[in-house]
Image 1 (cartoon, helix red, strand yellow):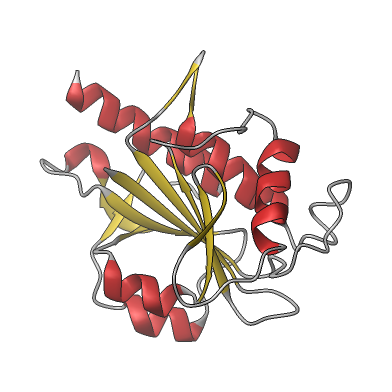
Image 2 (cartoon, one colour; image 1 turned 30 degrees about the horizontal axis):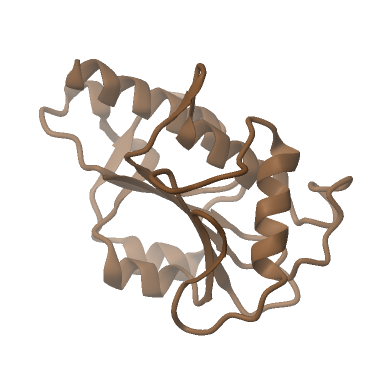
Length: 189
């Protein structure tokens, strides 16, 4: 199983955002939706061996995590609005400390990055990290940030985690996922 964790620093934690204004009312929810699409979509198919965790840190709080599971996800289409609608629905249901399914393959719970770090061994994607092309064995689980750098608190949590890079330039989170999955596909074939 390949896992991607994307931290959305401004991403809304309630389902009140507008599907017509994902960057504004959604707190750059568009960045997270593109990351979901990059993690799952192939031409005419979905990656069934992927999970994508979205850590939502914006208003009104507290932090929530939305999980997409490729093995069972339904109703996901390759556009931002589709992903956003599934996130919006997940955020509109009451949730507790355990994942609760909102639609097939989409789950939500309270809690953020610190909790995920205690549950999943992650490698950090960072342009200053070790180049994936020179790494003999790639990890399967990765942590990325949205359009913001990790906060000082987050950096403190991940200071000792291995770091990998997809190249010398800073890419958008969704592009980074695409490049990394392409490298994994090449190694698996």
